[in-house]
Image (cartoon, rainbow, N blue to C red; front, side, top):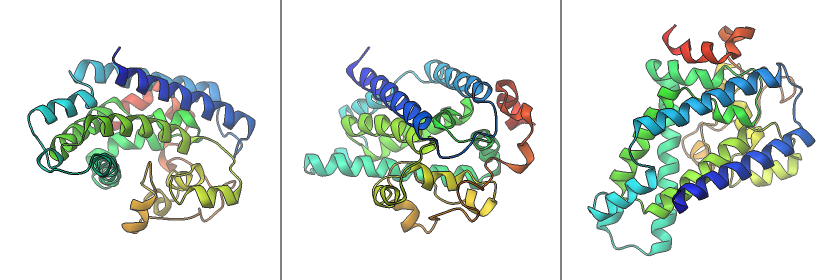
Length: 260
């Protein structure tokens, strides 16, 4: 296992364990469905995602960045920038790409068919951050490969971005009860669970807001920020109104959903 792969795995395991313990000790909302049934489906789809990436892509993203650097692909590989600035700019540029990717997956009907698998979860916890259809994962990774080649982002910025993105996806989907003051302060620099929960509201206007994953600034800049849900965090309904039935939480149903 390469050092980059070990760091990704360690970061994921640490974020999963910490978020899992935290949401059990201090949950934000009562559960609407069986945790065991949902976790079986969400972790099952994670396993299929990992298999799809393993079979579908010959390189990990950091190795692709090293290849781009060796061949002088991309903007940053043609500029002589201070190392610290280049790393920060590469990280933020990739984060901006993911923000717009997320918005496009909500806007384009054929892509929404895939992304709705993520939004059918009637509860929100750390495993919701893993609930993505394998085809969406492959398309998302292809977009990242194209972005890395176009930007020429340094491999260390790419590796850091992947580690942070995995950790924040678990954190901001977790059912964590943060004190209001802590949430207000933290969301100045990081997407918090309360901020991202709005995005999973059953209200369509709220679903089409708060698209950021890491830093919240893109939602402020591009006018997609919504501070709180209309009905409050305890009363709001999560998921999609057309997919609230019990079977919509099963693994086979989730895999078939985009083709229905």
